[in-house]
Amino acid sequence: MALARFKIQDKQQEVKQVEKSTLAGVFFSIKVNGIEQMPEGTHNVIHESLCIYLGKSYNHEISTKKLYLTHYGWTMARSQRESDLLLSWKPLLEEMLAKLARQLTAEGAVAAVAVAVALPSGAIAKKDLLTGAALPAEAEPAVTKRQMSVEYAFVEPKTELVSETIERPSRLFFTCNAAPPDSAVTGEANGLKVTFRRDCSFAFGTTGLWVNQLGWICKHDRGEIDTMRSKFSDATIEAAFKDLASKLVELDATPKDAIEWCGVTTTKVQLV
Image (cartoon, rainbow, N blue to C red; front, side):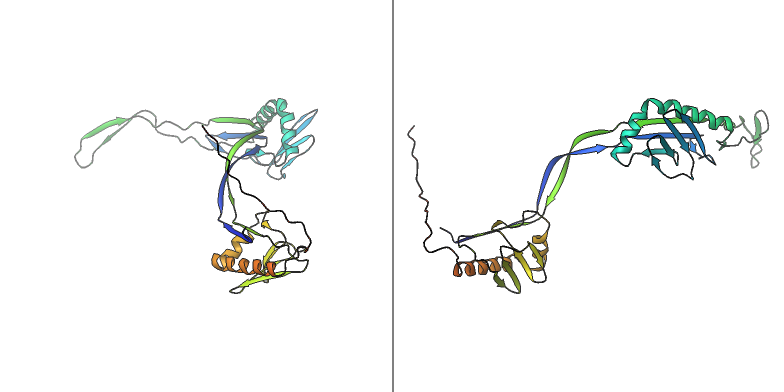
């Protein structure tokens, strides 16, 4: 039977199904000729259970009865509480924002982006000055018209399963059949110290690697083994653990009168 076992497991990638949640959000924008132009000042519409405020001077807030829109475009919930509030207001939002849009356009708060340019009426005849030939008449360029649109959308909150690739750090397996003593035992190779002590915390630092259990000694996968491998070769790490195993065997704390159980290997033959 082997006295000790050792293995370094490389980094591994694992694809897992994880839950991804999307919080609620609302989109509101008034565009003139496709361009957003935030109105000056502050504006609001009030319902008995909700007040909507619009203005660049406000701060983002979705409170119990108030929604502050600090800009045109998306206003997304930043917490589950805000998401739940937006969802509860959904039946009111479209009507209230439509009312706000009518208020803004009636007040003239939304400025025109394009200005019509006066042009000579009718078609204009031109000629080529090099040849004197008449050129086909061109129609008068169309005057840019002021077109306004009010856009609204609501993002429903949802939770869905998505595939996510998770990178697992390197792991290290070490076990020894000798019972370790209560005091610290240290193995060493090429400047690397590996210390086993029951009451220590698993860590890698300036004094080397400290372990407090056998088996997979880095259950939390915090990356200490990768850090150690970046400073020492796998051969050095293996040599240090081999030295630790020999020290544990020398200091074996197994009671002399302990009952010993041995395994028996059997072969089962089945006739067919």
